Image (cartoon, rainbow, N blue to C red; front, side, top):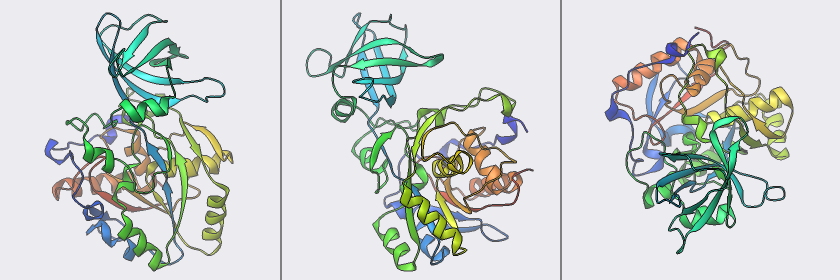
Length: 350
């Protein structure tokens, strides 16, 4: 299969620019039956059974977008991809840089107000062999500086500048560990009422952490899927989550992954048996899933690696049909859009 096989025509007006007024009032396309059923997200607890296990990604989105200028006055923008281990690299980050002319190594950039009230970022060089990432040293703790001066790293298809609504709503209600530059969007639909209803239904919950990187929005640049190189993202799985998964499987219940990031984390563990590390797992049709039974996910960008993942999970033809249904019925797409509940098929091949 090729990248173009995962293309579809999306009317621009279906790209959600703002979240729904209430998290759980978004729509939910239910694909567990022979024909898709149009539902509302707050119905989710009634679609699951006592003993089912929901696994969330509890990463927290940081205000990773930073604005500044070079010594010459030229404007620039940084998007922090990763804060490096402070024990080895104090106040150092890996970041994307948007600027008309790249500054020289050693340049000191004035960020978020420059000399008065802002901070400095020293360019140390490129991040390895990756031409899109750069290595910086900040003048203070990066998390502290991002919290004080950063902006919510909204996806490129959201056209407004970030505001107070985004600071609240481009974050899950159970976000715990800071490090993501994009939200695990399927989890944005959960609110306290849905979580309470799930508990009352006897549905169990557990969590993993995968710090979503900006690479999740990067378009595929190769026509042949096999030629694409995935970006790396950090993940961690608590021991208690592994225990919950084992108990779920032992009782014959279903594991429901909330979002593609949770799928990538769990299936990375299934392949490597590593509880933490970096993953660049690339899930495409033909992939043999070992852990996940149901997938709750948003609608993804055309020709994206996430379109390939959901097609691997639920079947290519089925997914393309569901997307056509969603467009016809005016579902809202992408990060602030609606969701669908998919059941795993034996094969994801067309």
